[in-house]
Length: 103
Image 1 (tube, rainbow, N blue to C red):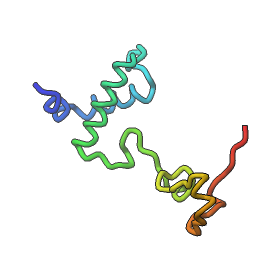
Image 2: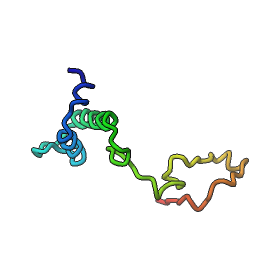
Image 3: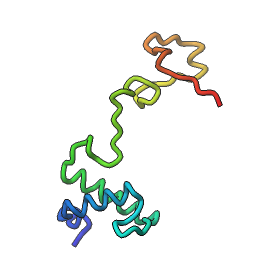
Image 4: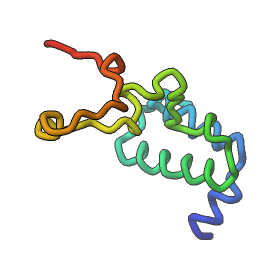
């Protein structure tokens, strides 16, 4: 049996158990997942979700960017380098969307 066939035939209860193990960092019997087990389990869960068309909002690792859209947390926001700031004045960027963090 190939990896593809295994994931295709994976029982939904086993998928949920694997996903819960990833979330908690331990197996149902309480043993901690090793780094290798976590990687393999994550790959299997992601592959299962893609193969079985799990809605994007329900997938492992999904981040709802609804409130963050258009802010510095949104990867679609383009940052300007210091040199381009001096030469170009981009009127499309709202300065209020960025927050300066001082340490």
